Length: 86
Image (tube, rainbow, N blue to C red; front, side):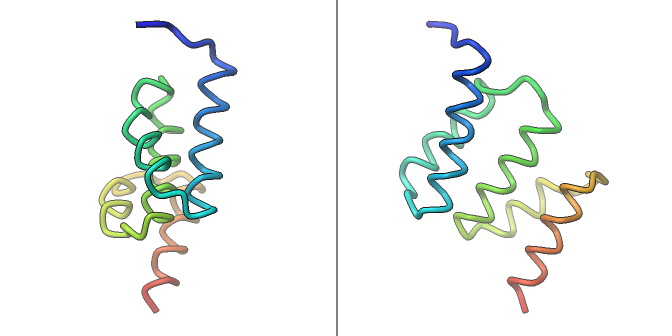
C-alpha cells in the first residue's frame, strides 16, 4: 500500500466534508469508509465521522458515535442533531 503524506490525507478528509455538503453521497461514503486510514487522531476522526453521518442523514449513528464525547465540537453536533429532530 502506498503511504500518503499528512497534507494529502487532510485534503481527502476535507474533500469528504465538501462532498457531503454538496450531496455527493457515493463519494462521501467512500471517504467515510477510508477515514481510519486517513487520520490517526481518534478525537478528530470521531468528530469528522459524526459530521459526515449527519450530512448523510444518519443522525442515530452520529449520536451513538458521539456518546461520552464531552468536547465542544461534539456538543455542537448534538445540538445540530436535536434541532433537526424538531
